[in-house]
Length: 634
Ligand code: GLC
Ligand code: GLC
Image (tube, rainbow, N blue to C red; front, side, top):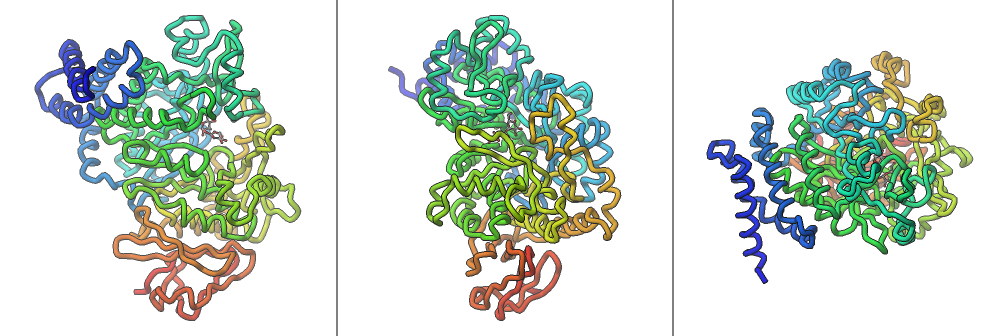
């Protein structure tokens, strides 16, 4: 038997010969740059590939094809992107700056199409956005597309939005405006209209192997004993029946078919789609539904060890052929699982669903014990990585805290989630929230909540604390580390929109309530202090500007700050020689943090948001829902 080193060596010669055959091993600058990266990352890629696919007869051929693909893609990569690759290698921490501000929107809903979106770039710059996530914009089925999360071609932009050339141009315009482009890589599944899916549906054996297809119910029944139902409103279990009677895995909607990553051909094909995306000028890809990409009988089929190996393998391919591209993980799962994806070799960037959900939890309960525990226990991550801290996404809010964490505080997970769902869907007496329930599963009692920030925080209900609560939540997302993410339209207080109910492709998916069209009328009021939109905009801008000027908010370093008040959250951020003590009052009345808590703080501190200064050694009083970013007064 060969040792691993011998195997690697043999594989390398095989791959190099394949590059030679493909006429790719030219000894010019470009070829040398590729080879340096190949030398650095091939050993790891080989090991991953061997672990994932060693038992497969085509393993080595697939690996050779993959490297041929990588070099072809590198040859095609535009010079300005190659320059960016080099620049980013010298500033790998670029995304940790306190000047980073993320935002997301739907191209059609915000601006009609890509050309229309370009018109908004000056506004994005004025606001301070440096990272723009465009919701899925590739070809997808007309009516049912899960908001574009059912991709029919990764190589074509949806016709009504523009073309790939438009996307490339936009990426360039954004880059020149200091804004990185983020798009989704929906790689767990394709739509049922994707060419591969159509071939599979027609019975083609090669493409049937691209998906999880079974002739009868035996395997589906066995798998379904342990997997959860993600969209029970759409179909029970994880499988749906195809027209020819076979059963196919579809975790999400019945038109989203899960790819079979146990087949190396699928990995190679999707690596090709990923590199093609990278060459359009995308800076960051959101790895959609990462938890679901590997299936193993007898498990939940979520966050399997191989899911991590697959991400590492995709990442290694990028390091070779599109080194500046970064991965962001979308894992809306148990907090232990969420962090397991955060690693420079896997996904250096990750959504922070726990902090998001617990900010809402604290607003409802007016108590900070759970969020405080999360900041102490679950917020610290690898220093070379970053959280994306957000108040809400385009999806539902799921109460993803760990039951075992809650139990330590005598909170019963199941009951507490039930309370939060009823509170946020306005079924709880006195609630300020106007959310809508999503995917209620009577079998498990599970449910999630949809709505815009303003509607959930009380602005829609006309609650006196509505605007303050919005600023409180954004004030946390903007100061808790990593990259804050704004849902475009929230900065002028967009409200829930029921129009989706009239649209057949959306009517059954309540998440659309939180995806309104660009609120033009509210934007028109944004400088008018007599309107809610104007008040919200001015205060959001204040937060944004304060963050940009505060080096202490860069990076991730965070430590808890005990306030000894059950309604006031505290934490300390530090960096660039600045220390910032964040205090956030979740109560509906004024709260005090006593003098004793500030013994280690400088006596005079200034709030970076509103500029007020405090003699903290006599204690600090916060107004209802007030947030302070206190630092040493100068
Ligand atoms: C992600 C998306 C969500 C979509 C799902 C399936 O969770 O955020 O909108 O429904 O993946 O692709
Ligand atoms: C995500 C999550 C699920 C969420 C859904 C779409 O991947 O796992 O909790 O609700 O997809 O919204």
